[in-house]
Each structure stands twice: as C-alpha cells, then as structure tokens.
Length: 258
Image (cartoon, rainbow, N blue to C red; front, side, top):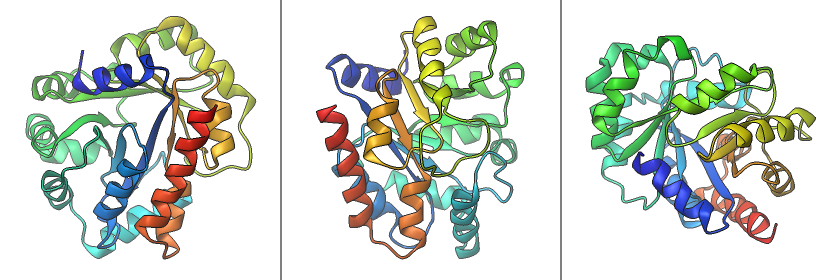
C-alpha cells in the first residue's frame, strides 16, 4: 500500500470525509502560498497541476490557468523544485499529461516527483492498457498511479481500474471536461456506489465540484471530493491565497458537519 493511500485511509477510517483541492503549479508568484493555504484550511491532500499546452481533459478554467502558467514560464522542474522547498504537511498528487512524462523519461520523472515530496500521479491520457511503461517506474519511486473511472465505464473494467489504481480511485462525475457546474449530476451517486461496491480503496469524486453543498452531496456515497476549477477561478480573477483558503475551509466545515 502506498503512503498516499495509507494517509487517506487513515483519515477516512476515522470518519472524516476527504477533501482534495487543486492548484496549477506555476500560476503566478503566489501559487505555493495558495497551496499552503489549502493545506492549512483542512485539505487531506492537494493535487498539483503540472501545466501542459494541450490539456484535453480540462475545461476552460484549468486550460486558462495552464496557459497563464506556461506564459509566465512555468516548467516541470521549476514546479517540482518549489514543492521540494515547501513543507506542505499533507500528501501531494501531481496531475499532468503523458507528453510531459514521456519527455522526462518514466524513471526520471517518477523519481523527480518523489524527490519533490509528491506521492501520487494522475495521468489521464494513459489508458489502463498502456500503463506498463509508467506504472512500474512510478511504483519503484514510491509514487502512486491514480486512475480515473467514468459513469459509462462497464462493470468489468471498473473492477480492473479499482484493482490497478493506487492511492485512491478518481470518480469522474460527468462525461466531459473539468469545470464548475451549477448542480451535481445524478450519475455521480450511482458511480460512487458502483466503485464502493468493488473496492475498499478511497473513492473520491471530481469534475464540477464548486460549492460546499455539492461537496457534501457527493460525499454521501463517496469518501470525499476533488475541487479544482472553482478554486483556480479565484486565482485567475486576482483573488488571494487567503481567499482560496477560505473556500477550502468552508468546504471542510460543511463536510465535517455532514
């Protein structure tokens, strides 16, 4: 069992609903401060986006955040160096695309994540059938490979995804790209139930979580939620790390109250 999974299991098994916010690495001079604010506000882990020029799984907000970070000059080594110098205090999970991994080299990239204190990786454009180059290199470095499951995933494939995923299973609330939405899709609860029926690994739901009420609703069947676009919108619109921390704190309070 990976260190990421141990940490999330320990929190879940104490009756805590898990909250994993996201920040785009390199998004302005204060992104590390935003990361620290998220951790201080009660995040159980934080997802770090390593920006790529063609983020096919991401909607307008994360695309804009990635583009702005790249325009500023953000690079994977600079992002990981900044993380290595930061004592965040919660597990970190990188989210990026396979081009970044391939260019860096599987072993080298995995070890660079581990050296920066990153314990997990989400690479959404690497399907289950093509994990054999990346997953062993990640495992050797102590980096969990987190897989995604969608509402239309067949039962047999869902079970295999849950078997192969490490750290947690990422349940996708809706078919489509990331982005804040006004309501929770009805398919989300069904997917969470299906995932919980075939795995004891933590089940986290993402894509479209933007309010404390949505976080609570989605966590009824799941172990917790991932929140991204709603937070990045604040930073893109000139908001401060403290404002991001306040939103994460409000979600933490709502989840604790149930």
